[in-house]
Image (tube, rainbow, N blue to C red; front, side):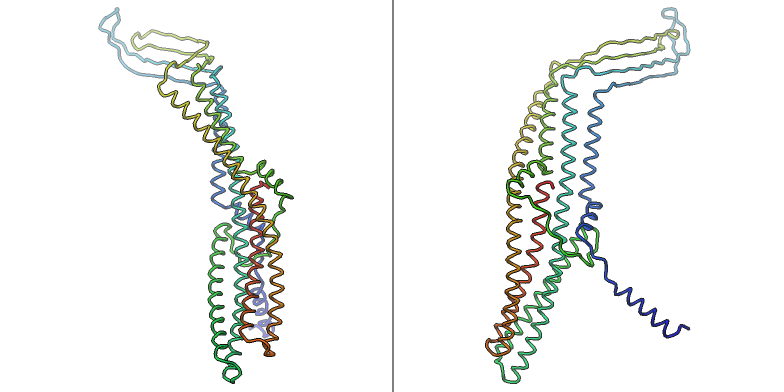
Length: 419
């Protein structure tokens, strides 16, 4: 039997362990978890691996090609005395070893290598772009969870106040010190607070679900909202950084260069291809049982396709694809420039909105304090207190939403500038 003191100690330790708060998840931890496990990033990385493999294939076109072929058979030959040959068992067989090194291909090989390298650079940029997009989504989800939870807390506090105001209005009404309208207004605002809390709780559950889908983490506790990433000093600096390092623009430029190289490769199909070869062969004939032939040959082999009915169409298609890719790259450049300007101005606006929201909250809190005193002394009706409570809530919500918006637009600008 344990002594009462030991049982009390064990109970205290268990309660202490149960009461220990969960470790807060920081934004950096959420980003690391998302970047390590997100399927969109895994897909982009797999496509990048395929693009790198295609570079190896294109480089391989410059290397010699070695082939080995052979045949072997077992049979019986009966020429019926023709050429004086009699029936005999035969083992026809042949072997050929060939080595060929391309010398000239009209630029097809070089253009193919350039296209593969441009496609690889485009795939690298797309992989970087996917990480930038996920980072923005995680930052937005983190801010959404934090904002939703703080909003739910504010609405819970407001509901407590509304219920207390309703209770006091009911007491004053029963005592004949307040009209029935005061009680009705208090009940209406209490119901409004209950509905707002239900909406906030539902929004919090949705935000948590999105955060979990992105990161695989359960945000039992979140750290404070971090400051937004550092923004460029000016709009011109932001646009310059985006045009130099935006991953979407880099991917578009890589695709355009790859299409141009493919067009050159298609045009080079008009020219011949030349290669040096070396071959060694051995033959045992099936018609002459004792026939033997062995040879070794070195030389140059050329191939020139003078007419191909589909060649002109392939060239036209490749050139059209190159023109389309170039136009898409120009469109992407203009779009990135516009998005960067909008994001930069959005960060500036969010900073001003945050400062205004802080001032609004301070003013609303002071107004609520003064209104409570004035209602208590009979200088103002109870409706004024209800309005002041609502304004204080709205100011608090505006502040937390402004903080979340500044974080999100900061990450959007960071993704656009390739920081």
